[in-house]
Image (cartoon, rainbow, N blue to C red; front, side, top):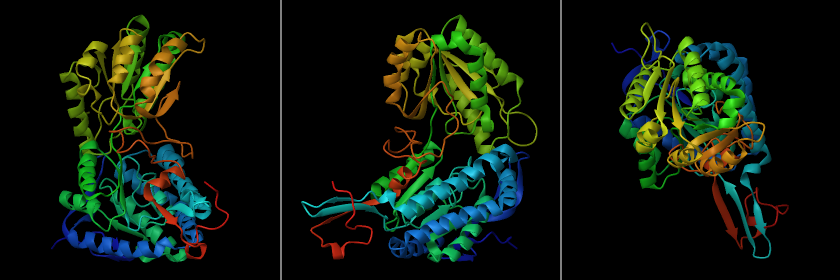
Length: 513
């Protein structure tokens, strides 16, 4: 007899999936499957969710902002009330530390961004209304008119979760329903969050299909989902190969899709900074690169150092940190295998291994803290391959002969989420900074000085985005309210429409154009 799988959540009902198979999450610290089976949904589930989401979109378009805000705030409170259970389950499914990572950092960040989304929904600031009285034209942003598909990543079971994370919060703040496709690394955490959302929706009086949950769909069905006529948009965070496939499918159908895919987050160390505090920067680099076993999209993956004695000293100090400290637990088997492949690619194209480079023996999924080094000329000769993302505690150090070569290296970088420049406090690096900053600025979404890029503050001013292929579009951010809400809104314009016929969010006290 086939073991019953966890129920899907469609049209407000928890019901048995129309499934073509099942899967189990794993405990990555041991490599053993967790007990609950989850379904792989068929097209029947997907179409049912799309049709219910389409009906919910019509109801949510004119829902009171207070109701949306009340749900988001109630959801945040429910998450906090079940903090211990959520943190324990996410720890078992991801191997991420209970504290401080899950309990003290990621879960509070998640509830904070839900409350920020609630404030934006209540104020309506995301609508950006404008009126041109002289010409009788008014405009404002409005919901998309269809459900937003959210596909969350494996490395943030709370903050980027497909039910409770930033994409879902932004879509809901703009009065769009959400079809959550759980990440298969943490389906149980996502299911529990969905159960808490279910209760909060009932209290707020929102449509039953405001949020729906599927766990996994076959590849071809995922491509159909993001391109379906009933879909409003898709938010995806994950690997580049899957992201590009989804983007191609959505683009062919003219459906918006917002992607966060890959980034090596280059760090440029200028000579004065190394002379001034090279050992301290090496320690900071180690801490940033190995935080969370290196499984952050803002992990510093490529570091450019000046060739010479100071650069060599930095490399030696970094190697000591990387080789003397144990690595953390990876999120799963695919992450370990991906690191094996990435390190092999870097070596095949001229990088020399200084430490690490292989998985660790024993139970679970771990990969040795790894540093590779390559000369600047060799990087320029194989720049594309040497920007292969290694999603884990792995980094490549590029030794640059001079500032001219550093600029040439930067000009070969693809689009990234972040770029960092370290410079001396005495002004000795100012001329070099003036050379390297402009080309780096054009290739990153967020530019930092004298600080490693790991960590993304939930701030209205934050840009967690960047040029392709870090994301699918350089004009949008996945973090920061209200800017992140704009991904899931459509601009509605009214020309010569009497005030009595305008929607309620367009009224006489609008700013004039």
